[in-house]
Amino acid sequence: MDPFVVGLLGTLLLLILLALGMHIGIALAVSGFMGVAFLSGFDQAISMSVNAIYHKISGPALITLPLFILMGYLASGGGISGQLYDSLSLWLGRFRGGLGIATVFACTAFGTVCGSSIVTTAVFGKTCAPEMRRHGYSKGMSYAICASAGSIGMLIPPSILAIVYGMLSGISIGKVLMAGVMPGEMWAALFSITILIVAKMKPKSIQADPHIARATWQQRFISLKVWWPIALVAGAMFGGIYGGIFTPSEAAAVAAFILMIYYFLIKLLPSRGEKRKENLRELGKIFTDTATTSALVFLILGSATVFSNFTVLTGMTTEISILVNQWGLSPLALILAFSFVYLILGCLLDSISMLCITVPIFNPIIQAAGIDPIWYATIVIVSVEIGLITPPVGMNLYAAKGVAEADVSLEDIISGIMPFLIAEFVSLALLIIFPILSTYLPSFIG
Image (tube, rainbow, N blue to C red; front, top):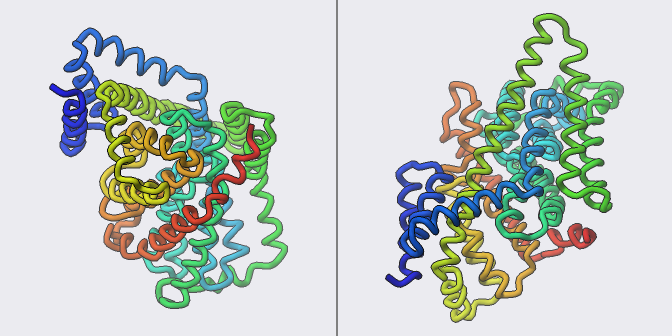
């Protein structure tokens, strides 16, 4: 049988397994292994699969991933998210839409120590959405703000998605991480503007908080003291990577160490007796959850390598690249076409799954077209993040629903998410029109 046909059948098998509910890591490994076995024999498939998985997950650069995941769990367990929100609400909650904007900026700040959209959405959906409802926000709008602002966590470093993309594509992880800074800030600004527009057009959905309006300037300035761990972590990471002092792995280690010290100072040292035992159990769970989450991501990355090797063996990526080149599409047309594919896949798959399936196929085409790989990487991550809040199966929507109060339905959240979905499409258009938004900061990294 023609290898190209085998490649198409292997891809079809992958989609069937995913449709049947098989985990993405297992589905990738099974499809890739069976394809290689069909083409080269069972023994060759065993050898190639084992070597591919080992070399992918044993690379020193991959230590960044569990460190960033650990940072997210430590920040959440240390109460950083709640403190950020309380401080920002004192400054911004005095006008209509202020609490929503405070949530957006708190999610943005928390994203600098978390790196996961779903974790950020769940944390703020649990802590901040009920507060917004109590102060006059509609239930759909409260959780929609958390779901949309949570997606910023995958843009601003540390970004788990940027690390995964860098590992799959082979481009500089540090540059991909830094490329997300300006787009992330742009999202925060656009979401804030969206909240102000909704507050103006639908005043019943967003109301001002008269209690926070009475906060004194002294209270507001005192609240700024809770920002020091965020400032310290962000300074260590951005300053280290941007200044060439740290590699991304070293920056992640330093930031995780800072948050570990913070957790000990805030949760363990002041506690005594049963409370200390409870906090120690929580710390143990943080390490367990970090290991579990990291293992799942490692499984996906290793399996994606098996499937990627299979596609290379079949020549499918080369054939598709030649076919696309024959169409004579311009680089802009290619980017628009691939962005559209990610937007569609975002309705069906989670973000890492999308990258693992598409990067091995799309990247050779992008390279042949001479498109800036960092610019394209940022466009891909933004497109994937849009998928996280796109109905019917945007993962952030379900993360928000999972922590929502009993009277909040998925339909409520979807109805509130639409203005933010429009804002994300605007951001994608701006990123395509102005590549400098994603390429300026990475240009300073050697």
